[in-house]
Picture 1 (cartoon, one colour):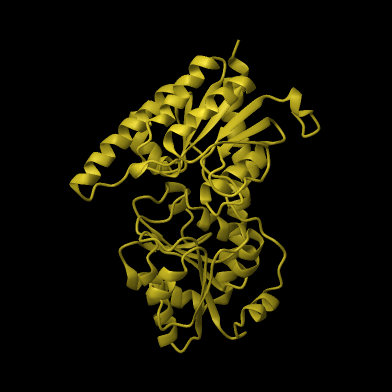
Picture 2: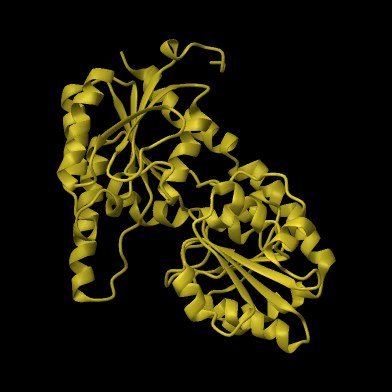
Length: 388
């Protein structure tokens, strides 16, 4: 079906999401990019919350629920009226309200859709895995989340996971035939930028070696690795400079105190794209290892940046295979190895250029939104066409 086909002649999809642009949120950005990418094939309606800013973006928008757990059921009459061919639930339980992601109304929503719109097939996209067990309280949380995901899967035709690890770990729970793996793409579209001009705008000297990271500075993003990389380069008589982008100003200033660092928060996507192109090296030190659910990682690949990241239990097999080709990985437990590789890359511009070129090629081939849209289309079109 071509982009010129009238919307009324295309299969209809409803996307239920807890957040949508202009909200600063990975799920919001992901949803808008997915809706935009699928728009050539489907008539897409987005059912979202009106609890924060007025939503705006691709698709026909229906701001229906208010961010409280029971309010998600307000979507049922709208879905019944629209009678979509397919429904996509963005399953991020912590974003729909409720304590610790407890929200039984999510699977009740799907149950009622099954009742009132029996011809509608359903996909749930899982954005958060099951909480790891660190305490007795976490045991209770984990058991509930397992139960909640199981109930979601019982009403869905397919479940999409962003990482191979989640498919491996939860296929038994949702059903192996239902479990599918589709990565998350970049949520920041590259814009043209003159690197020298951007650095001048930011007040960065031309001879500084700029190491950059982007996103929320939570515990999983090991800022002490970034400090170690900075200090290693500085000790070797380099001139490191840290460019910290994203909603993490307080944490970044606390953990990187005393270093030559510039923190830029609450940026529009185009600003992120411009500023990120000032970087000489992009760092992704994650405690569980980089994986295909990390949009901040894909942003760097899409922008053709040389990337140094960590490898751990969450790292997908296909990413491990690209170590040393499209990016560089070091063990998530080894801060010294991370800092050493940062130093080596800072001293080898030819190596950085080769990694940057390979990163962009990998992204365009395997992780672009065109590729993601094609994989979703291949997944859901048989479900739509199969119906009587």
